[in-house]
Length: 107
Image (cartoon, helix red, strand yellow):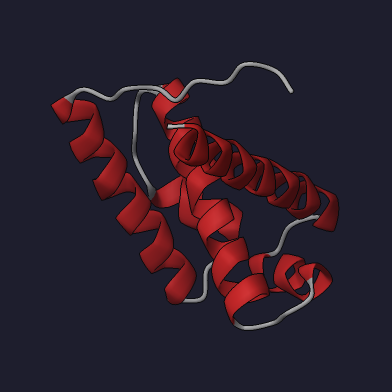
């Protein structure tokens, strides 16, 4: 498994991250597709925006697939996006959990 490190955010980046994530998740709760919810979240920093959108998608997968028991196909339908993107994000999320678990138990 490749070495992996998480980005350390500045206080301002953390604030922008939280605000943007909240806007995206609220848009999804209001019935928007994932793409539409992401488009209303105004964040100039493209790299930070990518992290927020990636995390928002993983949060929705965790909520809808793991908590509510919906299939990834159904989650994709509800979010208005291709299932292959969800499957990739799900795989990344599971890898994140694996890395975090290994770091925790090696500490």
